[in-house]
Length: 472
Image (cartoon, rainbow, N blue to C red; front, side, top):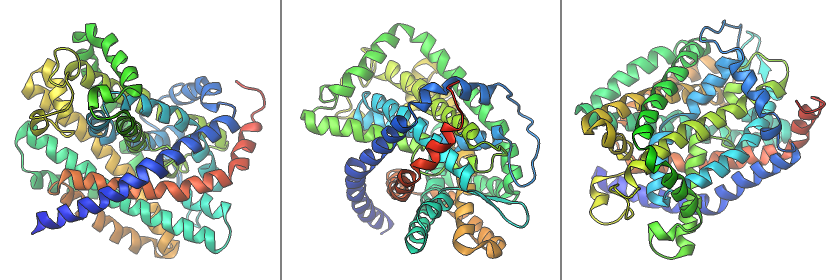
């Protein structure tokens, strides 16, 4: 009975997502990114060095607590924790399987323009944030949406966004993360999903109830460790497979424009799959334009919005051009090159044994051995997905407070937290494909009000940048 219901819901959600992803999402992501790239005169290029210096010039894992906020590095770590999750491992794998290696090229394109988009988001988050009577910071898209559109229309768009992000990240998104953890741990250690679900719910509950300061303390430590662990393991694989690296890059560029050569079918259908998969998974990976990471950047104790804007750009760079790219190189260089099991494409019996959930484990297993490869990816994914759950919970919490009012904050946060913990547990039990499609649906819906507000507040973003004077 449950399987029949899930199957029916899955078919409906897939049809909606196809329309949103192929026609609305791709257009909005590229349009917003192009628009801010042009209006800021390629801020992601001109201020890239300044952004790197801002992030790594005073790197610290012991950021001081600030009253009602975070240090700039803590805010960025929280944003990266949200960005670097299953989208970089499971999501990228799904994009490669469905859209071919060329989907990674389109992820790069989305990310390049997305760096300008996230600059605008972070800048506006700082400009429009508010402090309550207790000194706590409240900021994010709902606040710059109501700044862009006064009156009923602004309240409607902000409310629509708040509901969408609570469902997309606070509830459904956490299911994706716990689902990925449960699946990989089951493959690696044969541990039942419900046991992982209970453990995750308990640990997350302890951190959730600790508020922003506890979250910031955890993310600023876990993000550098998780990224370093994964990159070291990936570099070992790439060194072993170094002779295939040129062919790997060649496939990414070739199949970006000739996807039918590996996907089969006609050119039109194949190129649409490659581009839409790159855009959809690119969005889920770096979240530029989605409206999620501005919640973290709004917490930064900085006076100049531009400073947090350029730091935010580096978050997208690290997410896509470093972590996701390295993961894609591992998958393609081990599985799609001449001696790989997917060298002939994703057809036939291979589809019964390899899916987006275990693709990366299979890739690392070609070098580390099947068992250790599965264990390594499971541990990395635990860090990635766990940190994302922490950040996404905070983002949803901010919007729950917005919807029900600051006066009712304690009650709304308590109820929201309980529901999110239930979803974290359920994620380890549900169908992987349905969870992904539901998350994609609400991610897509979040983009629409956020993008409209970004366009409307272009002048405010450009004004913040123009005050910087000459390029650094």
